[in-house]
Amino acid sequence: MTALSQPFFQHALLAGTLVAAACGMVGYFLVLRAQVFTADALSHVAFTGAMAALAFGCDLRLGLFVATIAVALLFGVLGRRARPDDVVIGSVFSWVLGLGAFFVTLYTTSRSTADGPAGVSVLFGSIFGMSAAHATTAALLAAGVCLVVLMAARPLLFATVDEAVAAARGVPVRLLGYGFLAVAGASAAEATQAVGSLLLLGLLAAPAGAAIRLTDRPYRALALSVGLAVTEMWAGLFASYAVPRMPPSFAIMATATAVYAATFLIRRPAPRTG
Amino acid sequence: MIEAMEPPAGAAGARIPGPRQAAEPVLELRDTAVRVGGRTLWSGVNLTVGTGEFIAVLGPNGVGKSSLVRAVLGAMPVAAGEVRVLGARPGRTGDRIGYLPQRRSFDASMRIRGIDVVRLGLDGDRWGVPLPLPGPHRRAARERVAQVIELVGATAYAHRAVGECSGGEQQRLLIAQALVRRPRLLLLDEPLDSLDLSHQGGVAALIGRICHQEGVAVVMVAHDVNPILHHLDRVVYLAEGGSATGTPQDVINSETLTGLYDTPVEVLRASDGRLVVVGRPDSSVGGHDAG
Image (cartoon, rainbow over all chains, first blue to last red; front, side):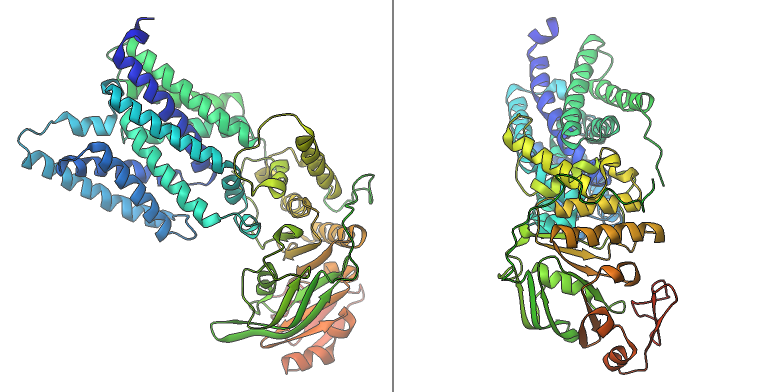
């Protein structure tokens, strides 16, 4: 296939595959822990972090990771038992987004050579614009996220389903809570590079939501969530290559949303029994 | 779902052959007291629980019934006296204790099968993910989970999402989760509270059966003593500052409770054998009162 011979497409495929896998894995626990709103907030934080990095003239990715991981941990500290509550998230993230607006102004007014599309690429991603080095770094970080989640999957599931019993059994519930928030922050920063901060929630929530609708078995759902995220990423990348007017972020999100919507046709949740 | 229906008692293979060390008590509290923020919640609790004994912890709301469970788990320090669990300090024997915390039910959106919830009780504290490799270890784990689900009579719905199960079904699955590692002591914090009356009787009978037939010592915090009254060996009645321990007849009577609360309390026995406590509106005996 001609797409696979193009370096820019190879880079996108490498980074996209691992970023999608990480998002599918983290997303499953986000949905199960009812922390999707946390991920939503982190996507806004990602924008602010990137803008701050640009305004201060450092690597955009540094800003992304520092901001998302720091704010994710802050949510944990402000919430109860490393589980952020919605009011805390809502207050912090609107403030952070305001900060983002401030950095945009700072960036565009202070640097005459400012590259205007940078802000747009943070918002909507630029996966076809990744250099080989960028793609490799993103892929390695995403692989690290996957590895950490896999290592912690079983106790994290225990702590998610049954926090008090898990704690009594010696599961480090608080440590897992903070660790998971940090990993979710890292995933948000990764996904921003692929699909942009405005759209990353779709990559975190849609495959996991679909997987949970399709199976009640936790490890199967985790694997399915990863499989769906990666497949949707591939489908989006190839579709966008075939139809150049279609930006990859749009194609990926459209596929993810279509798959999630399709699960409603496949299976309805069984009626609740008294 | 007919919740009150008893699963066949003593179904083949459903016995837990727990090691019986009759010499050593499962749980021992010696002159124990718990203090929170300088206030003594309760004190003077002397209790020795042997294998297969059923103990209820009673008392008005806010008296610190759950704190007794937390002290036994090692999650809360005691202000005075000593707690020994299986001959060791609390917190050292976590894998020999089954624990059912006070809770609301699982959210309907919790799309995890009941059998997975039980399985987490077996190996949920191990790192990594269970690999789908066949082997004796995996078979043994599966058999154990199926066995304990059979024991609590949850086989019919263990493969449904736990969020879709009724409160009574969830409670049975959680009891299975607490039992799956063959504990010698079961700590239950108001397991009947979220259930309606017909399910209360079924779950109470199940706990009594686990206790007396399987030889698991049970310490159960209860809001209403009546559903478990005829299964009980002894009760611990906690009161502001003090406590009383003994058989239900010795403790839940007008004289003892009047002495304990320093205010006139009357215990009446209804024609159906239920106990009703008059004089303390927030008392735990007498059931569905305003307390």
